[in-house]
Each structure stands twice: as C-alpha cells, then as structure tokens.
Image (cartoon, rainbow, N blue to C red; front, side):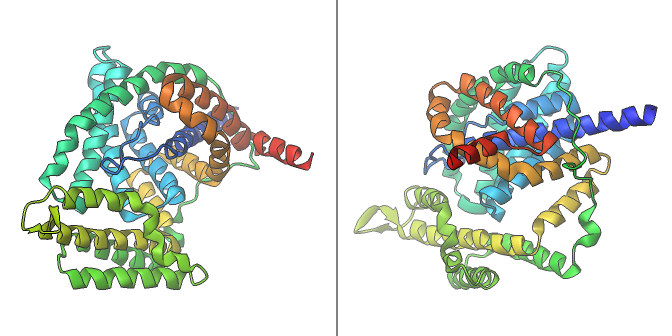
Length: 393
C-alpha cells in the first residue's frame, strides 16, 4: 500500500509539472503574436516567469533550472529553432532563473522581498543575459548597451505585472492533484544509448563550426559558409526549395543588425548615404552572413536529432530529476495541441493582453489549465472536439 501511495504521489507530481510546463509554453506562444520592435527584437513581456517563480518556490533552484531548459528546448523547436535564438533564450533564461532563485533563498523566504521585487530583478537579468549573448554573437558594438535604460524600464513594468500575477496564478493552480491516465503517460527513457554515433559527431561538428564563425571576419569565407549551409539545408529537404531562403523568416533579426551597424558606427562616410559608413556596411554584411549560417544550421540540428542529444545531456546533468524530465517528455508530446488552442484565442487575447495584461493572463492561465488537464490526464481535447462538431454541423 505504501509503495502504491508513493507511486501515485510521484505520478501526481509529474503530471503537475507537465501541466505547469505546458502553461508556460502556451504563454510563450501567446506572446509571440505581439509585434517585435526592430531595435529591440528580443523584448517581450515575459509573463511565463510567473511559472518560473512558482517553480522555484515549490520545487527549488536546481529543478527550476531544468524546467527553464526544457521550456526553451520545447518552445524553440516548434517556434523556429536556430543556434542563435536557442543560445539567446538559454542565456537570458538561465541567468534570470539563477538570480530569482538566489533572491528567493536569501530574501524571499525571510519575507524581505516579495514576488514583485523578484520578478522585476529577474526580468532585468533576463534582458541582460540576452544582451550579453547578442553582443558576443551578433553586434560586438559597445553602443548596444545603450539599450540598458530601455530594458530597465521594461523590466520594471513587465516584472511588476508578472510579480503581481504570481499570487493569482497560485490560487488558480491551488492544490489540484491529477492522476495521469496510464494510456497517456510516457515513461522516462534515457535516449543517450539510442543516439547514433554519426549523428552525435555531425551535430557536434555543426555546433563547433557555427560558434567558430564568430571569430571569422573574412567576407569570402563567410559567404561560402552561408552558401554551403543553405545547400546542406536544401539537400536535407529536397522537396522544399523555400529552405534556401528560410532565414528570411527571421527578418526582424537582420533589421536589428542593420540598425546597430549601419547607424551606430564610426568610419568613412558614404557620400550618397551620409549617415552610413563603409565600416558599418561591411560589419552589417559579415554579421548577416553569420546569422544566415546559424539559421540554416537549424535543418542540420533537426535532421540529426539534436533534441535527443540535448535531452540526454540534461539527463546527465540532472540525474536526480527524473520527474521533471518525464514531465518534459509529456509536454513534448502534447504541446502541439496546446499551441493549436492558443492560436484559437490569439486574435482576441493579444489586444486584451496589451491593454489589460494582469486580468488577461490570469483568465488565460485558468482556461488553459483546464484544457491542458483534459489533454494530459484523459487524452481528450474538448476544444478540438467542439471545433469538429461545429464544422460538421
């Protein structure tokens, strides 16, 4: 009997973590519909930090780091994976989670800091972490740090809203206990032994070559690299010639590079374009070629199962966190259904999110909680069923 109770408790924890993880991914999906600014392409509200703070409080620092990695991993491969965007999210997410965990352990538990203060500091360090990645991989322009005042302002505004949301969302979650349907459950399997050695080598080499581009300044080498990466992407997807221009999907990043290098650089001015220098134009072209390579590398990572390698690495780094890893696998299986549900709410929710974020997010979390619980506990998507019924009618 005791072992059965322990098994049920473990099952409940796994299901609860999967539900929280999927809600965070749903919030990410909703925020992606908000238009980006070319000068601040990574700026977004970051309301998913509500779940991060709750995770830190309930499951602790180490588990929260693993949760952050899983959320970024799952979201990244659905919403448009690339080495740059992946490292950008990891840089901001890890730094933010570590700082918020430290604040909670040192001040939060002693009631010297509340969820608003923790969320504001977390939002600021998330932006700083992303800025560091951008500086190292893309801009390498000291003027990039002129964005810090904007980031501080955004951190105060969005962090305050996020912090105020934490108690509301905690009440929505309550003490619900879910027992996962065995037919829907996914037992954790260590994928490390199943990854083909050649795949490991290809993924590792792709990663190393991609990082090495940061240190290459020769125009012709970067141009040849961009062509080679594009041709490899097309070879891996021969029925999709659009793969050749896949990076244009991330045009906002190229606009950002243009803003940083074309308008914020010293050197010899171009006569017909007095605000632009030859040095800035050269830097813009080289950095655009690097970004093109990183975006095209996504096809190699997908084809040779980078996600399995990454998951195996997480298992190695967090060997005692099997419940969170299993929750990640459950979330990976069901998140496409969740994203479909989010898209149904997207048009009506975005306007409300911009003008009344606190109420909108609270209502959104409450609705998504029920949808996700139905899907991961019973395997039945009521929203999809209702859509099918209305279509038939």
